[in-house]
Length: 400
Ligand code: PMP
Image 1 (cartoon, rainbow, N blue to C red):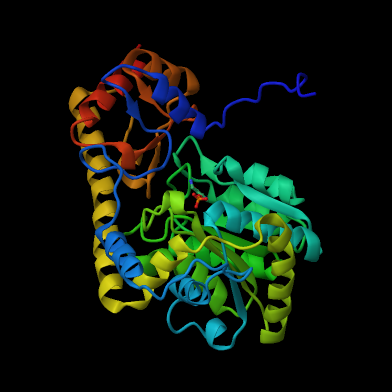
Image 2 (spheres, protein in one colour):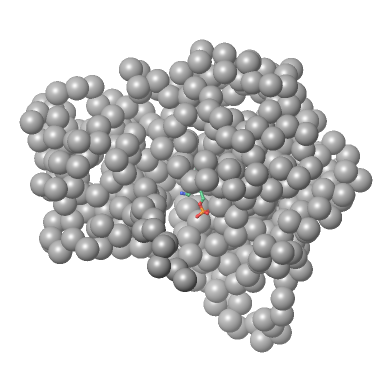
């Protein structure tokens, strides 16, 4: 009965890892997926995560019962505080509902489905370009997906004028997906002044912000600083949605820990919204897993563990910044044609190199370097040892 099923294409990002795994060359290097690696090229489990897990194992009162539909209560409260700030009036006034979801992706999907059912405008505008999965997540949630201008290839920076024009002509009430920080794939974020202009324009046109916060702490190394754009929008008293992921900033990729917060205008609205979120979640996966959220809650509620986390997070962010400088220096030393200063200017896990798909294919074939065909490289996958190999490959690709 399934003989007519056609072969589906690999995922554009995860498919890079599939190809990488098949390569037998000792030189192979995976810069496709955004996953942090140590200087030795190994995945990293944070010490603070190991400690939290130890606490959990030693606590014999812990059981494996189902969580409520909305997840672990402590985790939800602490996640809202982490993104909105300890002193957030919206939290104090009980205007925020937070539900534990399956990492960032699951939070986006639940938020998208809620909007498709209960919000009057079904169009969501995504930055161009954006993380490829956004398009599929929101389409399947039942929203209509459109784009707004974001990246300017000629400057390798923000097309701010185009962004303002596109948001200015979106229908009133339209949903606008904003990367809270460390925009994926471009590594280009608005300045605080530009954020303020975006906020002003969006509020004046009743556009609804949906923040995707997958990299809090990874852009600047400071959790508070990276949350500023979100806090700026919440401070004006208006509504927004926020999808949070702990995949990158706590290295909990496979634990699938995230949260969706919806900031409302009043506490009675927030509780009605939560009642509807439960109706979205229950038939989808019933309730979320307990282990990862317990790790996060253990770390966030203990001031010593929290402090340790911020140090380890900053070390990851700093290692990435060092890799940017090393790659930039290596290309300059080789005299590789072109201006590569965007490598040190861009922010977060990725560099949007400007290499085209043929150059990427050449680098994969000749140098065994794997990356997405849009020329995005994960700086978190590089090390001092592999920078020269990447610089050689880029040099050959652009001088060929
Ligand atoms: N949004 C963006 C922009 C991302 O880059 C990612 C991870 N690559 C996610 C959301 C979601 O990731 P996860 O579901 O693993 O938290």
